[in-house]
Image (tube, rainbow, N blue to C red):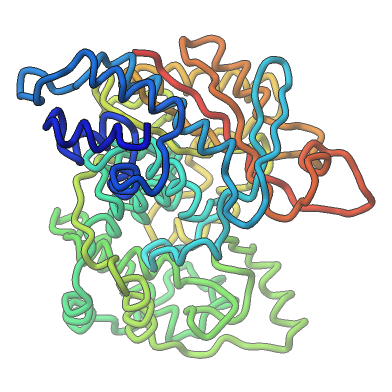
Length: 470
């Protein structure tokens, strides 16, 4: 059967690109099968036989698929599951476990060493995942041009990765800060435009005007210049002339406000995704015997911009849609338009988003504590919240589309939220395909399931995979 791919190509039933899309393969796989270097998996052999027997004619505009959509969906899903079962990237076989009829796939599926994430991802935000996670699903479950969604987009990792992979990106978040962090990187300016705009902005220090407490973080000259820059953005917004270069500079400035090196505007403090209170910063200063030093705001913004725009990042100019609102009300998306959702919702009461972002919100011109971010204290409430989100995701997902819903272990591993996601999915018509446990540090299945072997491990990524039937 190793020449079945070549037979289809020779008969001009499909082009290599068409065959790859219909069978859920990459062009590299098509070439490898056609040249006889390896045999197609059994589930694909049956599908390719189907093509040979029943579709002995080239594709046309009137026949966009070589065989029924339901058959295509079956092949795509089985190919994905076969990939999970046989995954062996670092010499470790996938460990399988079934619980309550749900298949779990446990392996080290991705890691920061797997590939160098594009520099465009390097924007700090609390509780965010690495670009390798959405890349794993986007490359396996979508084609270029497909819409990829994240209804809890945060810093926009899913959207940026989708754009880098030539997909169309859609995102939502209740926090207004999110759009400020995401949109500039989906339509990035050139470094020359950034430098020119920075030179044109008047950052003559302004009076503190009630912001004196912030001197715990910033040198007086730096704070005065930050207030000038902040006022510049607010004025541009008021006049309706805030363009993509302004938005880029504001995004970088937000991410350089506070941190633990001279690459930030502040004195030494916590990492940039966690802003401490003024009182706590005063104590940090006293303990470290430190005082804020003056910073060159322009130079810091320009340096970070160069880092973000290195490599392919500067090529971003993608089609995208974003919204600030509830994940259960994605009004900016039409029915059945999204091929894949990759997302991670708020985990119960784990993260204090308002407390972490109060200083960024100040610079952006809104009150972080006035944002109605969903924080649920009980598992029951969280499950109901998730059910509402999944009902909306079902509406916007195309037939045959997927949802990768990433959750974690909370409360010292006693609560594994994938069980609540599966329960919530039962209120929709989604099919629960399985659960992927990305388990980078554990070496035994028992660890991922909370069984102690006298070795303390780290929490795992737990991703529930849902599918919408055609």
